[in-house]
Length: 80
Image (tube, rainbow, N blue to C red; front, side):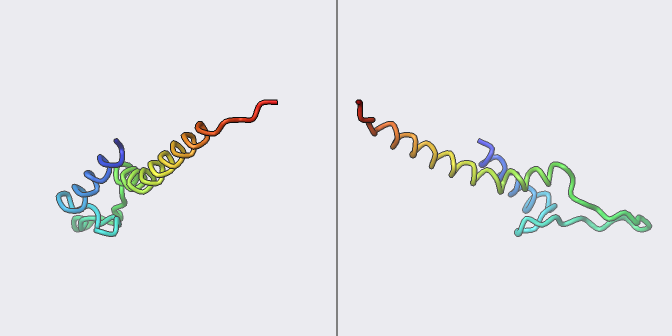
């Protein structure tokens, strides 16, 4: 469930809120005049990028592990 939600939020960040580029880089708005602090991505943007990258890997590993377990369950052990 995290995968589709994270990519929906990525879409919102890129095309609606415009906080990120299409390459998932943070795009900070221009700071007001006289402000010397450089804008950096906050926790939500960092978590969003992490979930968007990690979720597909976890999903594929989960499917592979499930398929492996099903294959192991079909094998019978020889009895002595």
